[in-house]
Image (cartoon, rainbow, N blue to C red; front, side):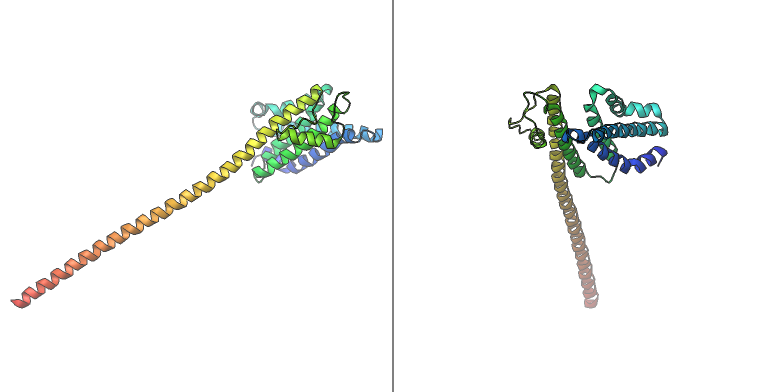
Length: 252
């Protein structure tokens, strides 16, 4: 294990904790807009601090990499999601980038199973998509997503591609979030479907392998039985021949 792998292994839990803090700081001003201004200011500064730590983590990983240019070339999205949210008009990208960074580091953990990752991705997209669309739609004069309950219901129906139509985004940012949730929902549904299909195929293959082994054992037993029958027949003929010879000599 090289230095980069040791760093990633040691900082994985800390990164997940920072992501949770980042999510809480991002959601607080949206869910509680009437909170104390000092608390909201603290939340904004917490966002910036955590994001600075994300950027520092990328810088350390780059420094520890033995082939730095290859590290940057192989992970262009990691660099993009660190740099783009620094632009104030693209604050929403901070949320998307946080999900991407955490998901990328979680995938490095070999012990995390696919089902756990999919469930975590669904819950994360559902929660943060709801918060993001609520921020975008609450102030819209024609919007009908006014509460976190409306936002959660809309996010759930959007991710499952049901789309009842009782709630719908009216702003450009809200519709952009809707596109992201729809594509993510389709992708995650495809992963779940593929995982279930792979499980059934694995079971069928195990059954076929077991049937093949049973058939091979049966064929080996049949060959052994045939060989035993041949040997018995040879012994019988030899014994019969010896007896006939003995009888002939006795008659003489």
